[in-house]
Image 1 (tube, helix red, strand yellow):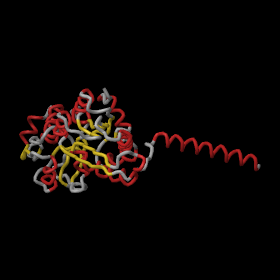
Image 2 (cartoon, one colour; image 1 turned 90 degrees about the vertical axis):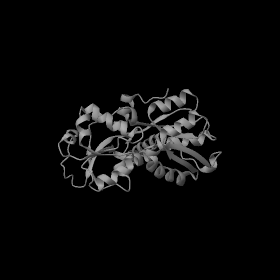
Image 3 (cartoon, one colour; image 1 turned 60 degrees about the vertical axis):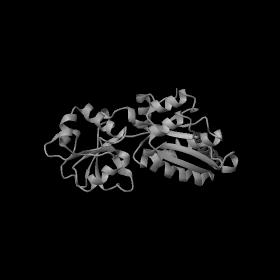
Image 4 (cartoon, helix red, strand yellow; image 1 turned 45 degrees about the horizontal axis):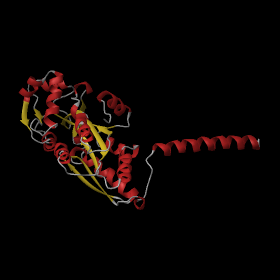
Length: 285
């Protein structure tokens, strides 16, 4: 009996060890700051990712002791700067075309899919207008507030959704306010100045807005493909390539991807994320 129990314990041990080894091989290697040549890493991303990156960066800093010099701003402006001669070490941008252009111009060493955005309808708490579908935005008397004056892709993406749904003209006739900033538009909905708007889900997860609106999903078939994709990659200007690569590995790990999911994004490592990677062709050039 003792030998049988010993044999069973050994099999259990080997099974556990094998599982642990597999988990370790899938996770990014943990390195201390002293094992890198640099103690600071410069990271740029489009502003829509700022909340998620600030949280993820804090975790990375606590694990490695490396300081992240982070800048979140309008992706097109950052991309233009990088193509014009400015440098950073890691860049997480919006719109797949930008990442491909940076690769083609030999500015970026490689890129990987990071996450995807999705669009939702938002109403004041209680949803007094009874909004359930996009078609409800066409009903007479529904007060629609839209960010059509917002910088790309804000207004353009919303217009694209309405066009795909075939309701653009009718909805625009119900529009009571045309906002120029998606973030500044949210208080108008929260305060009941409008019945409904269309926004990225990430806006509903911001600390200032979370729990203050009703969130109604929009079918993915209406999403315009262009603005959905966020990528991340190491730039050729990276001072310490090993550090930059390790940071990218961390941001793409389950630990960090969970942060992006919590902030309203579809993580690249999720089932839906993998489907979108294939559907949208999010591959390095």
